[in-house]
Image 1: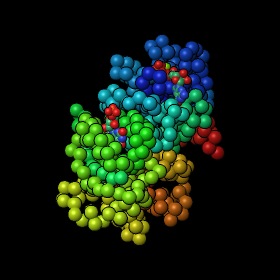
Image 2 (image 1 turned 120 degrees about the vertical axis):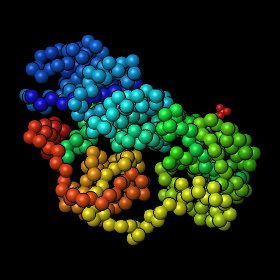
Image 3 (image 1 turned 180 degrees about the horizontal axis):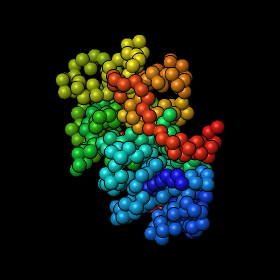
Image 4 (image 1 turned 30 degrees about the vertical axis):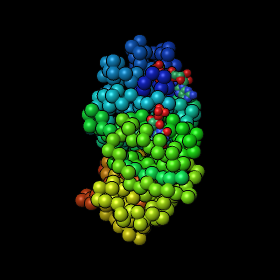
Length: 177
Length: 242
Ligand SMILES: Nc1nc2c(ncn2[C@@H]2O[C@H](COP(=O)(O)OP(=O)(O)OP(=O)(O)O)[C@@H](O)[C@H]2O)c(=O)[nH]1
Ligand SMILES: Cc1cc2nc3c(=O)[nH]c(=O)nc-3n(C[C@H](O)[C@H](O)[C@H](O)COP(=O)(O)O)c2cc1C
Ligand SMILES: [Mg+2]
């Protein structure tokens, strides 16, 4: 069995549950353990949005939507092993909580652990290009201060194509030929 | 009408990280306000400094600037230029956000027209202006070749800026995890001809997001093991990539 994990972290209402639902073949709300590679049940009960994409009988990508607030860091512990990718969702509109984001980046340490990291900005439908560039500028400076090289994507978590584009980019970075 | 151009410093956070916290919200609000006040201009942020150019009616510019000057989100506000104008340099922008001022045609034109004023700046002012203007020549012929070098991204470019070109994204992905030899990029033919590849790389250099180092070993980093190959071939099918 070849099983990889994608962690999706973000503040309240950033779109974690929506994104996991869009990508997953099972519902993140009522996970039922049926498949032999399904290890999701234990997660939903503790507040992780668990989803799964089966790539074949014995290959799957697990999706783990985890709250971004530090008081949930016990959940961060659960998912932070051998991550295939770390997706951080940030909502356009509110000033990001940088104290919290920096704690998160210190905890997951994607740069030290060589975990591929992608930033997804949600609620882009409420912004124009210049406003999104302004938010990207803030986020980019934060990433650089943590030595993280990561793309900042605009995503619509409820849209299948948009959600898939996130997987495309993780795949492109991770699958080095 | 008058204009004011200043440079200021982004206030560092407690942990000394320099992040322009709240810039996006300030930008949205200020742009709206500027529209009401018929203020036009430009703003850019680089290396922990802001440059802003404001133009409009004398009183309005003065009032706005005195407010901006005392805004606690930045400090060490240093005026570079302040003079009467007959025409606006950014008539179409209430606050144009540019990634690199040095690449903005209207900004360069404004600088050109006021080269006399640049020469009368003092040393401090000139250094501050130097953060945004007159950076190392970006003319293509003065560029070195990437032959034999290793390349890695320091940051991803703003993908909107580059129109989300698939080739650019592929190239960025390749240069994200570890330094990668230029010659291997070229040989792979995945990024077009040498000219096309160089053009993207040069763009990355002007955006200051490319690290170019001498590479000692020219072999492609290998990090694929058997199970990975299988995983990625299935991923490829799932993503519909041939
Ligand atoms: N317009 C718009 N709505 C969005 C976007 N992303 C999420 N939403 C909506 O925002 C609401 C919250 O989204 P969720 O997916 O539940 O967010 P979450 O991250 O799981 O939130 P918590 O579980 O409360 O931490 C839902 O109604 C989504 O449909 C977006 O990009 N644009
Ligand atoms: C670097 C920087 C540039 C600013 N530029 C503008 C601007 O062009 N127009 C504007 O209205 N406010 C700008 N502001 C915000 C002002 O300082 C001030 O917060 C804003 O005008 C709201 O003031 P008020 O609450 O008194 O109306 C800027 C702030 C900073 C830190
Ligand atoms: Mg949720």
